[in-house]
Image (cartoon, rainbow, N blue to C red; front, top):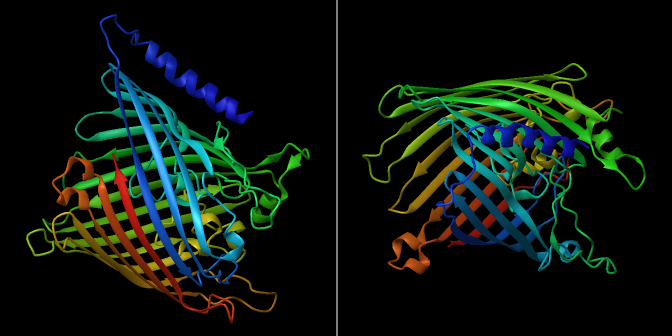
Length: 462
């Protein structure tokens, strides 16, 4: 029902507005077509990654292959865009995972939207399945928290108002079903073997539907001081099990109550001062309140010193990131809810500590160094200790520790295609990523071994 209401709202909001400017196409108008795609090959290695139960996961290493094809039709200011995607994997270990996500897996609609640009010369309207990200990507950036980097779309309607002089306002409404409701193509994994279990992609990640609306304002009119302000209303609702005529109980257990929905209101501001030619800053603060006396906050503050006139163009950042928490964990009154952002965030080794990457009860002072060793190459380092500011209960008589551990990350990428004089290889790239985490007293005894993550990636776009 809510999905239908969302689509109806999109049509009521967008299509009549387009019609108000007489969108009817002239006979002399001709459609323009474009298409393309990309291929991403990854090999991931993990060992002793943490989990949300203060323990650790088994070793894994596997290859994952994502393919995407897109097409676009443009008629004057009107654009229709569609992209289909597929990702399958080859597990070397764990044994229990070898039957999951095998070729051809599931081909799904990754993007499908209608866009009208420069309506009344100051607003763009986009309706349908689309990608969105604002500001520091701490509030809105990944709508599909249940499938990793396989997709990150939103089913939404978005209006972008351009007030000139680098000032914009985005108004949006989002509905994310816990499952993909658009048609898919592919096979359901053979359930006859214990190693060939069916794999169900949950977009929200934990048996819940998510919907809401918000405003995001960005002002870059002053070159020495940019700023953002936003408000997001969101409802998290237990997914309904139509086969059994009830809401899915796992979600209620995760929420820590017997309600079927949870509402939050998030207000925030982001400041981007530039102190000198080489020294800049970033500060973001968001406050969140909602049902059941919920009150939480998120904060980020950092200083960056960069020198493009030096060798390797170093950029050094010192920062602190914070999300509030509660002794009752993610379901607590003061635990930060990630709004519509569930990227891996800090790193692949850090994110599994939280249910479906829903960061909370997290304090991370850190430093970061970005370098450009040569043209078309990037190298970055990041490191710092991580804490859980609020002590969580291990039992009635014992608490978990507050030191999550020490973390370090290195990334290197190279745009190979830009270094080769060939139009066929222009979109070729390669990247490497390594992470290390020394676990602290936040974890159970015997499940606090050092965690490792490694990734090799090859990409090609055409």
